Each structure stands twice: as C-alpha cells, then as structure tokens.
Amino acid sequence: MSNLWDVQPRRIETIVVPGETVPAIFWNAAKQRADQTWLREKDLGIWRAWTWQRVADAVTEIAHGLMALGFERGETVSILSNTVVEWVLADLGVLSCGGVSSGIYPTDAASQVHYLCEDSRTVVLFVENDEQLDKALEVRAQLPLLRKIVVFDMEGLHDLQDDGVISLEALRELGRAHRQQHPDAIAQRVSAVQPDDLAILVYTSGTTGKPKGAMHSHRTLVTSMRGYNLTGGQDEQDERMCFLPLCHIAERMGGEYFCMYTGSKLNFVENPETVPENVREIAPTVAVAVPRVWEKFYSAVTIAIKESGRLQQLAYAWGVATGMQVVDKVMAGQPVPGSLKLKFRLARLLVLDNVRKLIGIHRARACITGAAPISPDLVRWYMALGVPMAEVWGMTETGGISTYTPVDRIRPGRIGIAAPYNEVRIDEVTGEILVRGPNVFTGYLNQPEKTAETIDKDGWLHTGDVGQVDAEGTFRITDRMKDIIITAGGKNVTPTEIENELKFSPYVTDAVVIGDARPYLVVLIMIDQENVEKYAQDNDVPFSNYASLTRAPEVRALIQAEIDRVNKKFARVEQIKKFHLIDAQLTAEDEELTPTMKLKRKLVQKKYAPQIEAMYAG
Image (cartoon, rainbow, N blue to C red):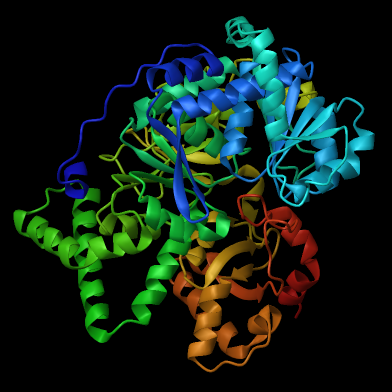
C-alpha cells in the first residue's frame, strides 16, 4: 500500500542513542551529532540553524546558571512560554541539573500560574516576555518558594530593576562563571539521575476541577522515546515542524524528545497564525498535527478551488475522484489495477501534487493526526492526494501515543493497533479502553486519590475513552465515557461521530452536540470566521462584525445546508434538529477553548444553557 503513496520510499536509518534518562540521551546525542543542525527558527524573515553543539553550549550555560542560583536535584522549574527554541533549551537545562521540568500554557491566567507554581513547588520560573512576566509578578508575593524569574525576551524590559528577575542571557553569564569553577558539575548531576526519578510534570485540563500534575519519570519518557521509533521511524534526514504547545505531551514527546533521539530537524514556526505559511516553507517529511489544523488546510483548499476557473475545478474533481478510487481499492484489501495506478500517477502529476504543495505536505511520506477525533472522510481526502494519513491515540498519562496506524493498515475512523511497548485492551463490562505498560505515568502530583481512581491494582490505566477492537487488533474509539448521550427515548448516541462530520465542512470550526435526556439532538456551532466571511462577501451578505455574521439569515441557511448534509448519514434519532451559532469570536485565551483549541463540552453547555433551552422550547 505504501508504494502507492511513495514511489521511491527511502530506508530509515536505525537510531540507537545510549542512555536510560532524558539528559543522558541528550548529551550522548549531542556528542554524536555535534556539527549537524537540530533546531531551526525564523528570525527577521530568515531561517537560522542551531547545531547540536550550539544547543549543547546553551544548555550547559543554563544548567550551570541554575546551579549558581542554588538549584538542587529534585527541585522544580516551570516554563511559561509559547513554543520557541528557548523552551527546549530551558527544559534540557533543568533536566541536566537533575531537576523537574513543568510547562505552563502561555494562555493561562495569572491565577492559574499561581496554582501551578504552588502545586509543583516551583523555585525558578522561566517566562517568554513582558506579557508573561506580568502574570508572574502579579502572583510572586504568594509564591514564597519562588527564588528567581528568568525572561527569554527582554524587549521592552531593559530598564527593569528587580533583583528577583533576570534575563536568560544574564543566567547564561552566571553559568559561564560557575562552569569555570565547577567544570564537572553537569556530568556529575547527569550521572546521578536515575531512571525512576521524576523528570517532568504535565498538567491536565482542569475542566472538571483543578488541573492535575501528571508525573512522568525518566523511565516512562525513555520508553516512549525509543518506542516511537518502532511505530513510524524517523532519522537525521527528516524535517519536522514544531508548533503545538511544548507543555502538552504531544509536542514535548513527539516533537522535542523524539527528534532529540532520532536527530530529526525540528523547525519552530513563528507563531500559531503563521502555521500555513511556515509549513509550506518547511515542507516537513513527517507532518504531525491535530485535527483542527488538518481541517483548516482542507478548508483552505476547498475555498481556493471554489474561486478557481472551471477547468481547474474539473481537473481537481477528476484528480480527487481518481485518488478516491485507489483508496477504495486499498481499503477493501483489493489489488489496484495497473491502469488505475497509471491514472493515479497522472492525477498526481497534473493536479494532486500541486494541492500538496499548496498545503506544504509535498515532501511528507506520512501525515500523523492525533489528540482529538478526526473525520474519516478527511483522512480519505488526504490519502486521495497521495499521502497516507495515520491516526494515533494516547494521552498525557500514557506519555504520548499508545496506539498507532501502520501505513499498510490504515482504516479511517480507527486509531490503529497497540504500540509494541504497551498493552491495550477493552474492558468487557464498561467498554472502556485500558492501557498498561512502562510508558504509563507514575501518578498525579499531590493527588493520590485521583491516581488510585485512574490506575487500578493490576496496573491498568483507565483512560475514560470507550472503544472497540476488531479481530485484527485494530482499535476504534466510540466516545468519551462521560460524553455518551442517552436521549429521552433511551437511544445511545455518540456525539463525536456527528461532530466530526460537521467539522468536515469548511464553514464549521467546531461543534458540540447536545441531547442527553432530551427528546432530540441540537448542536452549538463555532463557524470558521475566514471562510464564512469570504462566503458573505462573495454573496453580498451584509455584516458589521463577527456577531452580526452569525445572525445573518444567509449564513444560518449556509450552516443549515451543512447540517442537512450530515443528517443524511445518520438515523433519524441521531439527526440534528436545531442549532445555535456561538456569536463570540473565541481564542485560546477564552475559557470555552482548550489550549489545543477544542471546545470544552461541559463548560460550553453550562455557559450557553439559555440558548440550549431556547432550542428545546415549544
């Protein structure tokens, strides 16, 4: 199957970097690859490279700087920043001191920063810039353990006079002086770190209470780091894009640590808004993203085709239809006739490769999607372009992925097979997906009762996801246990499937289906601002702002048509009867959205309760 996507697949080099802890692997990797490029960032419009040696020098100075501040083994440092190179440098500096590294989302409010620093007993806090520094200063008086705040970017802060705040460069200066006096300090600290020592804290969403600090030891991280290479290898020739929050397990493990182990180049986007532009510049060989990003790329192509000439539209339709014919054969386990293979190669040459270049995945030998459910139709569309899209599944508590999809076993709507380093099974009574293995976290910080609720006496992690597994060992998630809807008529409905179909529309960014103990299903919808605005402009629909756009009759008719399309795919009891368009333009700073830009189901239902009741009135 993979040969249909990649006519000349290259051999992936087997990567073996010694070490049983994260810092040991980093320093061994840096020694092996000293002059090679590892990290790249865009500065003043130019992509600039960080060699392994340059990274090692920076990590050395940061680690020595921390020790100069009195940082001891086992103490915690928190990092409050967007996804930038300095995040990685600080993280590796902390781990090289035998410390614990904890990330904080840059969208978190000052009160959340206070809670996370207090709960983790943070003694040093890295912040990105003046905006993040303001949050730290607001709560500093309530954090008696906090000894120093280190700022990555001092723009606008050069006149700051505060003994408790220093720049990253000043910390590195301290480190250079400390290194001269204690040249063997890092080697001693790294050799003292044990596999079962606590390495990182990853705080989970606090939608059902206070955030929980998931504890990962070096052993759990190294298990996943090495295990990832068994699920879909990378090597030093690969290019990856780094843009998800590094305090999230997906980018921390799948981006920073996995690329550290394999030597793959890690390219940092300028900011979340420039991802579409940067992905075309980077052209990653392995493209990893959350469904929200894949949906945006698809929407951009769909809108661009609608604006193109008739000939281009016909060519695109023919090319995608040809790709779908190949996908249908492959999915059915049937051989692809030589004539269809030739037709598909022609479709790629004339149409599909150009679409891939428009997105920026023309060099990708695989696209990886995870962290949230994705529409099977969207997976099929990417496959029709000539690039396999593999779904993976996992969670913070499993150190990243627990299931993966080999390119010769892609089944849209399924999350693949168990990764070789862990066991995955379905609870016979509840249908819950359970995971057990050396990659599973060691528990929640300061919350032993929550740990006991999550990991049973036999070591099985209760994930909260409900699923199924077929005879081939391929898993499928049907929904979250707490999200399954039971209508007033007693019908069990899995809202995720309906929501995924709605999000396949270029005009819908997110959707929350509601109907528990209700006579029928309704939905709250967040429209895609860019695409709906373009539709309104093209069709002379008057609007003055985002809210007025959601109230325009023509826009409501547009969304109704999308709902009608989706309803045809479901039984009558599973069809959407009414909808409400969220009239506020939400960003990652809003409480309704998670840091990975997903609507929080329970919070949204509570906040929009009056609108929901109105849909059921009468």
